[in-house]
Image 1 (cartoon, rainbow, N blue to C red):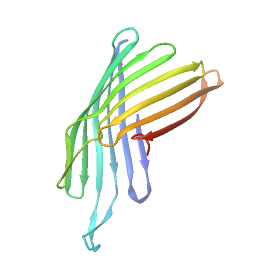
Image 2: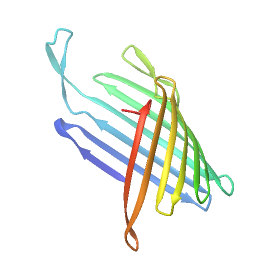
Image 3: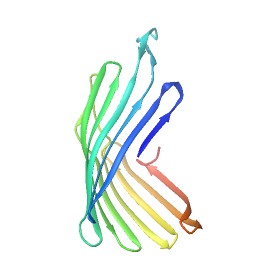
Image 4: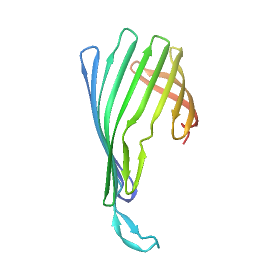
Length: 189
C-alpha cells in the first residue's frame, strides 16, 4: 500500500506498507511513514522573524504475527520513530505486542504499545505514548458487532471506548458498513 496526502501550506504525508503471508500460520509486515511540514517562519523570543525552518517526523516498522493454537494468535512489532525540528533531530525505538482470542461470536484482545526508549529533542526528553489495552467484541447477530475497550496510559490515566458496527449487503460481494462509537478519558480527543 502506498498513500500520499497533500495538505495546505506544503504539508504532506507519505506512507508505504507491505504485508506478506508465509504459509497458513505466519504473516510478516513492514511499513514507513513521514510527515513533512513545509517551510514555516522562525521567530525569536521577542516574535521577530529570523528565517524559516521545517519540522518532519516519521517511523519505520517491522512486525510478525502467528497462529498460537486453534483460537489464539499473537504478534509483535519493532519500530523506530524519528523527529526533526529545525536543526535538532531525535529518534526512539519501541515495541508493540498483542494477543487475540477469537471464536464465532467473541473476540478478546490484549495489547501493549510504544514500550521503548525516550525521544530527546532540544533539551527535553519524553516518553513515547505508552498504552496498555484490553478489548472485547461480540457478534450480536450475523451483521452486527458490539465492542468495548479499556485503555491505560500511564501519562493520562484510564480511558473507555465502546462501539457498534452494522454490515448492510448491497450486492453479492459488496457491503456498506455503519459504525458508531464513544470514547472518554485517555481515549477521548
